[in-house]
Length: 248
Image 1 (cartoon, rainbow, N blue to C red):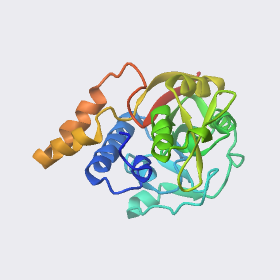
Image 2: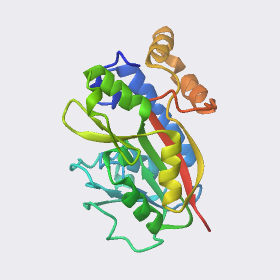
Image 3: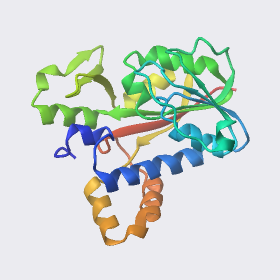
């Protein structure tokens, strides 16, 4: 993945087929992960509305925090029935929520990498989760961080503070990158039990592009193949995703 420019690596570039596949993987994974019964879902994914709308369509009530510890986002568009189930809140922390008030927390879009003080944020997540509630968390991987540095020939700016890896991006922002061990420690440190950690995708952009160029109908097959893969390390993939549960 190293030849891919940094603006492509965070999902904001124009590598169309791969990001179409990536978003389809996220959507299917979220669909499988969401509670079966109607629940209260807290979305900390940055205020873009994509995942809030999906949760609403699945019958859940959603609190979408638009400004959670990052630059303001723009709430997404919803259908008339979805909008009734989504409430937008502008806040940079979760102080507005009482303890044990939500059933699930979705922190997609690299939310806990954008948030450099992730331990504090995850402690807040654990506080507002009800017993038995779950959190889905996506972060930048160490693979991504090293690719960003290699692209810039900027190794001197790799900062290591108490084993926390802070990666400078070309646009001047800094994100926090994790190994699977560090992501587990983030979740267990907040008092949550880790259910699983895996790379978000193990199929490379070149593989995805090749397959979709051969047969545009292969997207569903690629997504199923991805989600049925059982990667045994975190040496592949630009993002890691984890599911964790609060004890009953």
